Length: 197
Image 1: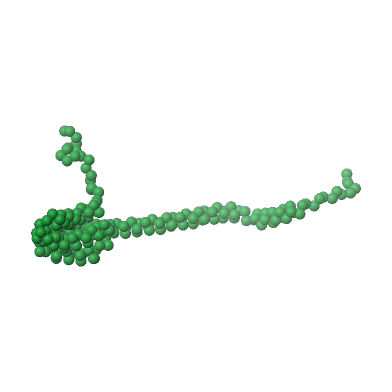
Image 2: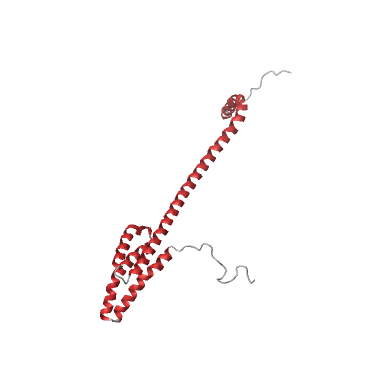
């Protein structure tokens, strides 16, 4: 049966026409590339993953290298500071030995010269106390002479205080570089480490 007249088809909506046409063109373009894209896209994503991973690894290694350099510098500085505190202790010991002798001024000058060259390595409290101590040692002979001249309690107390101040530097140096024990013992001295046997 044939129709006497044709029913016209409604034209598609104008916005649908553009999408359909674009979709057809895209499909027409991608169809021959489809096998290639199935291989290339995963490879591109894998390459992108490798690049991102490499960048993360590189930045992580750079950060670890920087931390390692900083740690090595701190250790080097720590060793140097420990060495300088030991030298300060040795100088203080010599100053104490010479305190009531004619060599005290020589030891004071030795301490003063050493302090000028090394005070930056000492902890701030020890550096200040070291300078004050060799100055107190320089004045100690005058205080003792004053006490011998008048023998009163005030000058006697000044001599004792000055001597205690000079002597106190040794403990302050030791406290500044207090190191942990190499092998701390939990066994009391004189007790058997194996228990009651």
